[in-house]
View (cartoon, rainbow, N blue to C red):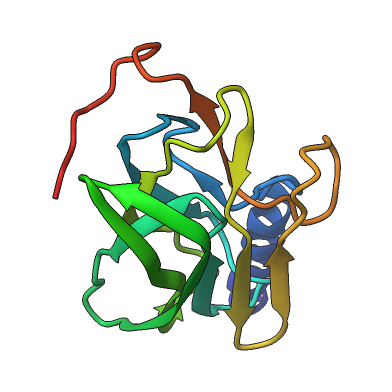
Length: 180
Protein backbone atom coordinates (compact mmCIF):
# COMPACT_ATOMS: atom_id res chain seq x y z
CA UNK A 1 0.00 0.00 0.00
CA UNK A 2 2.88 2.39 0.75
CA UNK A 3 4.10 2.14 -2.85
CA UNK A 4 0.73 3.17 -4.30
CA UNK A 5 0.31 6.38 -2.27
CA UNK A 6 3.47 8.13 -3.55
CA UNK A 7 2.57 7.16 -7.14
CA UNK A 8 -0.95 8.55 -6.77
CA UNK A 9 0.47 11.63 -5.07
CA UNK A 10 2.93 12.30 -7.89
CA UNK A 11 0.25 11.71 -10.56
CA UNK A 12 -2.14 14.04 -8.75
CA UNK A 13 0.60 16.67 -8.40
CA UNK A 14 1.46 16.43 -12.11
CA UNK A 15 -2.21 16.75 -13.03
CA UNK A 16 -2.59 19.70 -10.66
CA UNK A 17 0.40 21.46 -12.21
CA UNK A 18 -0.94 20.83 -15.72
CA UNK A 19 -4.31 22.29 -14.76
CA UNK A 20 -2.70 25.21 -12.90
CA UNK A 21 -1.00 26.47 -16.07
CA UNK A 22 -3.48 28.97 -17.48
CA UNK A 23 -4.61 28.23 -21.02
CA UNK A 24 -3.83 31.83 -21.92
CA UNK A 25 -0.19 31.74 -20.80
CA UNK A 26 1.21 33.32 -23.93
CA UNK A 27 4.72 34.40 -24.83
CA UNK A 28 4.84 38.11 -24.03
CA UNK A 29 7.25 41.01 -23.54
CA UNK A 30 8.06 42.15 -20.01
CA UNK A 31 7.67 45.81 -21.08
CA UNK A 32 4.56 46.29 -23.21
CA UNK A 33 5.28 49.77 -24.59
CA UNK A 34 8.22 51.61 -26.14
CA UNK A 35 9.02 55.05 -27.50
CA UNK A 36 9.39 55.49 -31.27
CA UNK A 37 12.89 56.57 -32.27
CA UNK A 38 14.46 55.04 -29.16
CA UNK A 39 16.20 51.85 -28.17
CA UNK A 40 13.97 49.15 -26.63
CA UNK A 41 15.18 46.31 -24.42
CA UNK A 42 12.90 43.43 -25.35
CA UNK A 43 12.59 40.77 -22.64
CA UNK A 44 10.63 37.89 -24.15
CA UNK A 45 8.97 35.78 -21.44
CA UNK A 46 8.49 32.07 -22.16
CA UNK A 47 6.20 30.62 -19.46
CA UNK A 48 5.99 26.97 -20.63
CA UNK A 49 6.75 24.47 -23.36
CA UNK A 50 4.43 23.07 -26.05
CA UNK A 51 1.62 21.04 -24.44
CA UNK A 52 3.98 19.73 -21.77
CA UNK A 53 7.01 19.22 -24.03
CA UNK A 54 10.35 20.96 -23.36
CA UNK A 55 11.25 24.01 -25.48
CA UNK A 56 14.31 23.49 -27.69
CA UNK A 57 14.29 26.61 -29.90
CA UNK A 58 12.81 30.11 -29.84
CA UNK A 59 12.73 32.02 -33.15
CA UNK A 60 11.72 35.69 -33.35
CA UNK A 61 11.06 37.52 -36.62
CA UNK A 62 11.82 41.24 -36.59
CA UNK A 63 9.02 43.39 -37.96
CA UNK A 64 9.65 46.30 -40.33
CA UNK A 65 10.78 49.30 -38.28
CA UNK A 66 12.76 47.18 -35.80
CA UNK A 67 16.40 47.88 -36.69
CA UNK A 68 19.92 47.52 -35.28
CA UNK A 69 18.93 44.35 -33.40
CA UNK A 70 21.41 42.99 -30.82
CA UNK A 71 20.51 39.74 -29.07
CA UNK A 72 21.84 38.86 -25.62
CA UNK A 73 23.60 35.47 -25.57
CA UNK A 74 22.27 32.91 -23.08
CA UNK A 75 24.64 30.48 -21.36
CA UNK A 76 23.97 26.95 -22.62
CA UNK A 77 22.06 28.19 -25.68
CA UNK A 78 23.24 28.56 -29.28
CA UNK A 79 22.42 31.87 -30.94
CA UNK A 80 21.68 32.09 -34.68
CA UNK A 81 21.01 35.31 -36.58
CA UNK A 82 19.40 35.67 -39.99
CA UNK A 83 20.50 38.84 -41.78
CA UNK A 84 18.50 40.52 -44.50
CA UNK A 85 17.47 43.75 -46.16
CA UNK A 86 15.03 46.12 -44.48
CA UNK A 87 11.77 46.94 -46.29
CA UNK A 88 13.15 50.46 -46.78
CA UNK A 89 16.35 52.29 -45.78
CA UNK A 90 16.34 53.48 -42.15
CA UNK A 91 18.27 56.28 -40.49
CA UNK A 92 20.01 55.55 -37.20
CA UNK A 93 22.42 57.99 -35.53
CA UNK A 94 22.60 60.06 -38.75
CA UNK A 95 23.61 57.04 -40.81
CA UNK A 96 21.50 55.23 -43.39
CA UNK A 97 21.21 51.48 -42.87
CA UNK A 98 19.60 49.13 -45.37
CA UNK A 99 19.99 45.70 -43.76
CA UNK A 100 20.46 43.95 -40.44
CA UNK A 101 19.19 41.14 -38.25
CA UNK A 102 15.75 39.97 -39.47
CA UNK A 103 15.45 36.90 -37.23
CA UNK A 104 16.97 35.68 -33.96
CA UNK A 105 16.95 32.04 -32.86
CA UNK A 106 18.11 30.60 -29.55
CA UNK A 107 18.54 26.80 -29.43
CA UNK A 108 18.92 24.92 -26.15
CA UNK A 109 16.74 23.19 -23.59
CA UNK A 110 14.05 24.73 -21.41
CA UNK A 111 12.07 22.12 -19.45
CA UNK A 112 8.30 22.65 -19.63
CA UNK A 113 8.11 23.12 -15.86
CA UNK A 114 10.49 26.11 -16.03
CA UNK A 115 10.13 29.74 -17.09
CA UNK A 116 12.82 31.74 -18.87
CA UNK A 117 13.47 35.02 -20.65
CA UNK A 118 15.19 35.79 -23.95
CA UNK A 119 16.57 39.31 -24.35
CA UNK A 120 17.49 41.55 -27.26
CA UNK A 121 17.84 45.28 -27.92
CA UNK A 122 16.28 46.94 -30.91
CA UNK A 123 16.01 50.49 -32.23
CA UNK A 124 12.50 51.55 -33.16
CA UNK A 125 12.36 53.48 -36.43
CA UNK A 126 11.15 57.07 -36.26
CA UNK A 127 8.87 56.20 -39.21
CA UNK A 128 6.66 54.03 -36.96
CA UNK A 129 3.28 55.45 -35.89
CA UNK A 130 2.35 56.32 -32.28
CA UNK A 131 -0.55 54.25 -31.00
CA UNK A 132 0.23 51.29 -33.26
CA UNK A 133 1.38 47.95 -31.85
CA UNK A 134 4.56 46.46 -33.29
CA UNK A 135 4.28 42.65 -33.32
CA UNK A 136 7.23 40.25 -33.16
CA UNK A 137 6.08 36.80 -34.39
CA UNK A 138 7.64 33.93 -32.41
CA UNK A 139 7.89 30.23 -33.22
CA UNK A 140 8.48 28.02 -30.20
CA UNK A 141 9.90 24.63 -31.17
CA UNK A 142 9.72 21.81 -28.63
CA UNK A 143 10.90 18.21 -28.35
CA UNK A 144 7.35 17.30 -29.39
CA UNK A 145 5.41 19.86 -31.36
CA UNK A 146 5.66 23.54 -32.24
CA UNK A 147 3.69 26.53 -30.97
CA UNK A 148 3.35 29.47 -33.35
CA UNK A 149 2.85 32.82 -31.62
CA UNK A 150 2.34 34.64 -34.92
CA UNK A 151 -1.17 36.16 -34.92
CA UNK A 152 -0.68 39.92 -35.40
CA UNK A 153 -4.38 40.85 -35.56
CA UNK A 154 -4.37 42.23 -32.00
CA UNK A 155 -7.75 40.58 -31.34
CA UNK A 156 -8.50 39.02 -27.95
CA UNK A 157 -8.92 35.28 -27.68
CA UNK A 158 -6.98 34.32 -30.82
CA UNK A 159 -4.81 31.23 -30.93
CA UNK A 160 -1.12 32.07 -30.73
CA UNK A 161 -1.05 35.86 -30.38
CA UNK A 162 2.32 37.36 -31.36
CA UNK A 163 3.98 39.38 -28.58
CA UNK A 164 3.56 43.08 -29.25
CA UNK A 165 4.81 46.46 -28.09
CA UNK A 166 2.54 49.53 -27.99
CA UNK A 167 4.33 52.40 -29.72
CA UNK A 168 4.49 55.73 -27.90
CA UNK A 169 5.29 59.14 -29.37
CA UNK A 170 8.70 60.57 -28.45
CA UNK A 171 8.49 62.63 -25.25
CA UNK A 172 5.28 60.87 -24.11
CA UNK A 173 6.88 58.40 -21.73
CA UNK A 174 9.91 58.00 -19.53
CA UNK A 175 12.35 56.65 -22.07
CA UNK A 176 15.38 54.95 -20.58
CA UNK A 177 17.77 56.72 -22.91
CA UNK A 178 19.86 55.35 -25.72
CA UNK A 179 22.14 52.37 -25.29
CA UNK A 180 24.72 51.35 -27.81
